[in-house]
Each structure stands twice: as structure tokens, then as C-alpha cells.
Image (cartoon, each protein chain N blue to C red):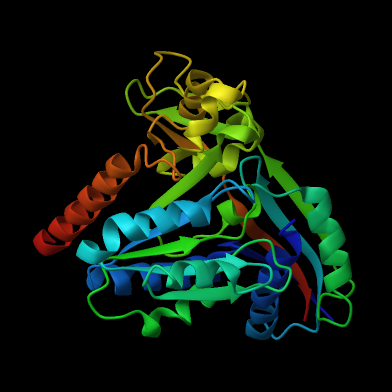
Length: 114
Length: 225
């Protein structure tokens, strides 16, 4: 349950962006949350709604895009989607793989009124 | 009034990562190997650190940062071993963040070879926060069960080393050591696995050897860089 501290970090970024663009308010916030990011999107939304009161994003809506896990094999180069937490390449069996998607916890974009 | 969309694409925890990178650079530059210990409460992090203090401190100079929700108890246990230790009490937060660790860096004695950070007991949230460590070790105690790696994949996926603790209880528990190792290696084939008993001493020498070797490699890499 560290979603509230993630939202607190998010708001540091939001306030900085709002200042940078001389925004009157933030109306929409879009996040990308990977399946391996270790956070629960529903809890992020609850934390966001609790935190936004009295901030520049008080009327903002939060949209979360959940991204699946993808891995790329360093041996055979094949990229595959993963949902089983078995980190071996399904094509050649090698375990030297890199997670290319699914770890991210990103502020993707915001909509402002200026 | 105008509407405007701004593409940001920045990591939400970017500021934590930045502070963590500064800690790593500063401490590694001073020859300190930083180790972040993650596990559920009661898996034996502090007891393992007490044994490591006995096994390592005289020769290798260690220091410990303890993270808990409340009390100084863990830091006091470590100080009794003659090792400098600081307690961070989070007052409810379920994990440590780099900023809190960073505030203690000036206190770490010159000549320290190893800084162990014992995270708040929790197998979920601490996995998302880089504290500036070079090694992340996840502990799994035998009473917790051999099925934990796939239940808490991020902690195991982000670790460098798995320390199975309380191995002296294996004879009394339905804990399948091979299954636990195999599950953890499925998630993270890079994991180094150690089977330890802090109370009886098993596996501690191997773990110390791994830490010493990791620090030596780190120093060598920095010297050549």
C-alpha cells in the first residue's frame, strides 16, 4: 500500500509542470502503469482523488493505462508477451532475457487550462 | 481560456531514483558496498545482520541503517555488536525512500566497507524504491512457505540475491527448498541463492564471501573506469 506516496511524488511533478506551462489548472492526468510495477491502479485512483483536494489538479481526472509484460530474448532476439512470471524465452528457452515492458510507472501526459 | 495537452513521459518515482543514484555514486566512490535487505516481517533480517556483524565487522567495517514503522529496537540490537547503526522510523509508511537514507550518509564513518539497509518488513512496497544499493537481497524464511516467490514476484524479480533463512527449521517444516529456489529462479534467473541459519551459523561464510567478492569487483571496476 505505497500508492499514496507514489501519488505524493506524482503531485510534485504535476505542480512543477503546471508552473512551467503557466497553467490555471490541470484537467486530466494520464499514467502508464506496468503489470510488474507493483502497484494497484484502483488504489492509485483512490489516493489521487483524496490527494487532489485543494491542489491545482482538484478537478482533474486520472486515466490509467495498464501495460502488459513483454520480454525480449538476448540470445534469439524474439520479443514475447508474458503473464506467467516464468522468465525464460518461450522460443529458445534461454534465461538471458530483458523485460522491455511492464515495469514502468510513468506520468504519460497531462491536459491543462492556460 | 485555452486547453493544452502536454506529453510528459517521466517516471513518477524519478525524484527517488535521482537521489538513489547520488547516494550510490557517493558511497561507491568512498568504497562502500550498499546492500538493501527486503523481506516480510519476522523473516530474520536483524538476526542475520547480527551474525554478519560478528562475522565481518572486525575485518570489513560495516554500518547499518534500520527501517521500521516504530521503535529503536533493531538499531539497538545492532549497536550492541559494536556496529554503528541508525534507525529510521517511518511513522506508518510501509517502505524506505532514498531521501531518508540520504540524510544519514554524512554520519557514516570514513573507512566503512559495507552499508546494510534493513528495509521495513514488507515484501511488496519496498521493491519499488531504489535506495542507492548495489545489491538487493530478498530474504525468505522457511516458516513463511516455499510458495512465496510467485506470490510476490516484484521483490524477487528486482533482487540480486535470495537468502533463505531459518534453514535449521527445515527438518520440522513442509518447506521444499528445491521448489522455493526453482520458483525464484523462474522469476529471476540471475539470482544468487544462499541457504542460511543465523542461529546455527550455516551459510553465513558463503554469504560473507559473496559480499566481499562483490565489493572487490565494484572497486576494481571503478579503479579501471
